Length: 253
Image 1 (spheres, one colour):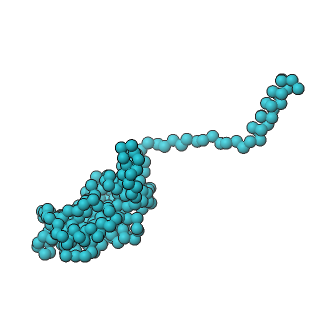
Image 2 (cartoon, helix red, strand yellow):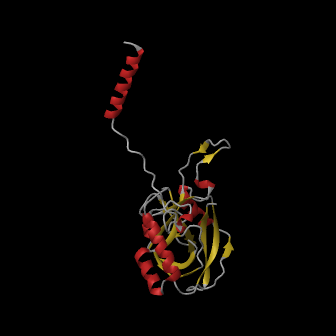
Image 3 (cartoon, one colour):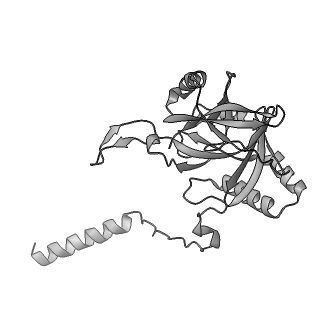
């Protein structure tokens, strides 16, 4: 068989094989229409640089619009239905009902040397936000690491938002002001219940204080997961007792 017929035979077989092979459909590139909210996040309502589901983005957007434009009744109804933004730490980088960020604390990440080699392979800790009506919800998961404060003379720590100090207390009620997506809001935590607070906050100075040996010992027991690098104490005013009480808080970075 001369070279011409060899080439013709090979070409025919190749064309026949291609004809019998299943055809791979061409990839379709879907164009996404740019919308103003995408400057912050692809999902509307999600904060910048966060891992955030469409479910959380929807609640977040409703919160922002309600607090900025809603009536008092609408604000209370939203808080009663969805809760309020509440910050904490978590070991999960992504979760459907949680908005998460990389922690700003180097202490919460695996430690690396100057060449990028991991020298302390600790479990990463992330910043988390959920809409809560009760801090009890943060106790149900072993992946959640809530922020706490402890009052001198008491055994049970109190869950509070991350990186926060209360403005003052009124018995069991603890008053805070927070910011979420550029919106300021006030709330109180009372017996683990988180509720919107719409009256003006009283003005009471938060005073620095040395930590007692009792508080430092108890805090060391609480910090068994090494969430905090250190601790500090503050005097917080209680309007019911009309005096200051000493509290210890954790410091991560």
